[in-house]
Length: 404
Picture 1 (spheres, rainbow, N blue to C red):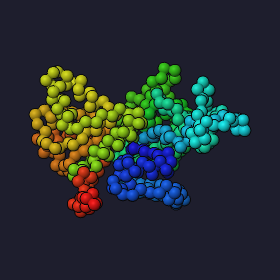
Picture 2: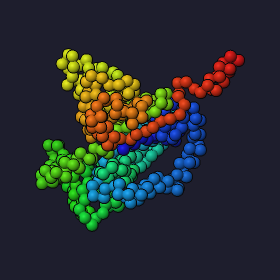
Picture 3: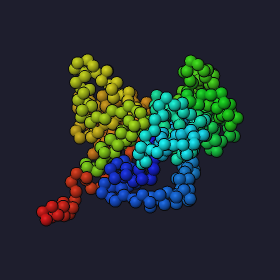
Picture 4: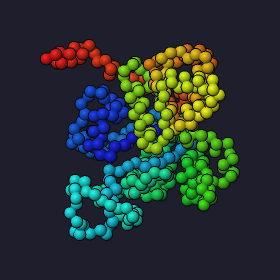
């Protein structure tokens, strides 16, 4: 599951001017005109009034009827999304506005809050009162909302998604609400989650719903885990811990002819992952395999493999421009194998997926690699005119306008 957000309608329109990732989401080509900000706001109100987002989840009934979803094993996860409100708007609740000095810049006044103790109990945003000051570990505090997802573990289908107030308890409380709405309580089921859910209250509430919490045990020395050792040593607990990472670890294969924007989309996704604080490595397939081949010669192969197997996101561009030779098929297989269910990988290629097995030179090795790669993958086939060389009609028109 991937979540992207823009803080305002006007900023979303600005992103559409230059961000190919957002254009791709809306099926827009690079030269399609963007929306007007005012009409975009009106369309947003129409989407909210008619509850269009809920209609996306109506397809879940079809997936359940086809037995494509698990009703026994689920995963919950939460994150923070940045609010439109800025830190400058986070002022004391009892502040008297009539005693303010005239701002040095009415459009963007200077606000010095260094040395001031600020909390949600004493402060509030005067532009978005529902936004709260919150932060993730090792990150700066921002005005935020909390986002929550419920995923079934069989195929990684998103079952429910909600946005709530970022108050410190929303992650666990919203998880219980989603489980109560979607879990079949006639039999015992399991739910996986990270260590943020490891509290006695969450475990108690899960038990009341006939749900066994397979959440990660906390490693903080100051508090004790609410998950007992009997649950943690069960084989099903280990399976749930592997499955829960699928909420954050999905692969993507971008295939299509040259010039349709595969590398641009991959780079845009990598940039978003960097902004979210994840480690990203971008490398061409030729460079990756060349570095590993050179590393075999100077006995640094194992250390070089760690560079490509440990990042949260690995982007390999232009796979399949040439057949794999020597030890390259084994190196590529090892990268796919070691990253399987441990990190996300994006491949771009001019070849269709059906043309990949001959590249390995060994159908058995190719089958093992593609089986792991496609298990949690989104395959996106991109088509259309190349962005590098426009159609001949457009070139002729451009040449004519230039000559005049």
